[in-house]
Every structure is written in C-alpha cells, then in structure tokens.
Amino acid sequence: MSTENTDIAAKVKAQGRKRTRGVVLSRKMNKTAIVRCVTLTRHALYGKVMKRAIKFKVHVEKNSANAGDWVEIEAVRPISKEKHFRLVKILKKAA
Image (cartoon, rainbow, N blue to C red; front, side, top):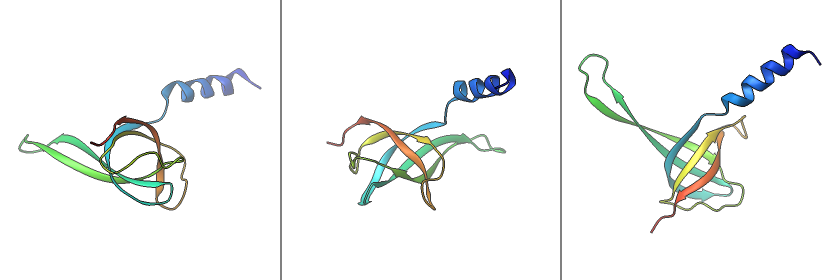
C-alpha cells in the first residue's frame, strides 16, 4: 500500500462526517425517525436573518428516540431511498 493512499485515508478520517442537531417530529416507522433541523441564514439582498427548516429521515437502530427529543445526527451512505442520516446520540429527552 502506497503512502499516498494512506495519506488520503487519514485526511478523510480526520474530516469526519457532517453532524447536525434537530428535534424528532415523528416515530411512526420502524427504525426510522423524521428529524427537523433549523438553520439561521441571512437574506442575500436585505440582510434579514431568517429561519430555514429541513426534514430528514434518520435511521434509529434501537428505536430509542421518541417525538420531541433533541438529537444529534450525522450524514452516512444511503441506507434506503430517502434515509441518508443516522442517529448519533440523544441530547435531551422530551418531557
């Protein structure tokens, strides 16, 4: 194995995967949750700060997250047609 390949592998491992936080909206599917992630963006022309929300289908292996929980998710290889994220950890349980 060349040193060039190991250098590339080390860089990819060091970068890690994109992680984000959100709230679980629905848990009606087996091993799947719908998570809503909100980001703040600035309008290009007017400069007003706006909220933008996007929903992701997330793979939950042990069915541990429930609706209302704050969770951390990360991007992974496609698990199914619409699932490209997996649950990393539950940050805060719902009341």
